[in-house]
Length: 137
Image 1: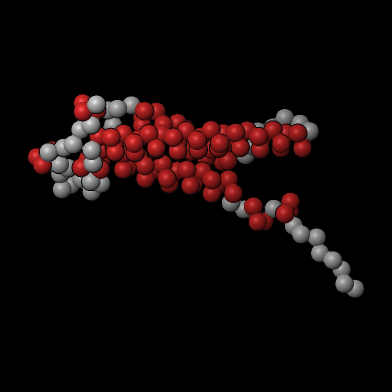
Image 2 (image 1 turned 180 degrees about the vertical axis):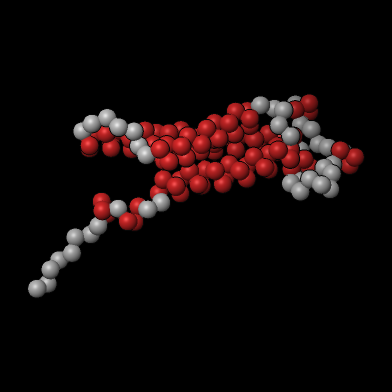
């Protein structure tokens, strides 16, 4: 049990050029952070993939013929899902450095947010959501 828990000594602390201070945490806390980020990335990738594919099937069923969704939507979805898969894979590996974790988590946050925002952008202008008005005359 004691071999699984590693606390760094004073001379093993992170250097001043590392702004994350993640290296100063004990090994269990770091492993928990990696597992948490891996779980978030896996869930995001799975839910985004299922949502994108179901939206595509709904569009094909509604239009009555086979077609792909717009290229820009497809590319941004592939980038967001692909990077999430990469993050989940890297977090399951144990050779990630502490400073790499902060950059990877920050980029995951940005890419996953952009993946959602790009898909939702412009929803307010589509005719599907127009509210019917009542004529008072």
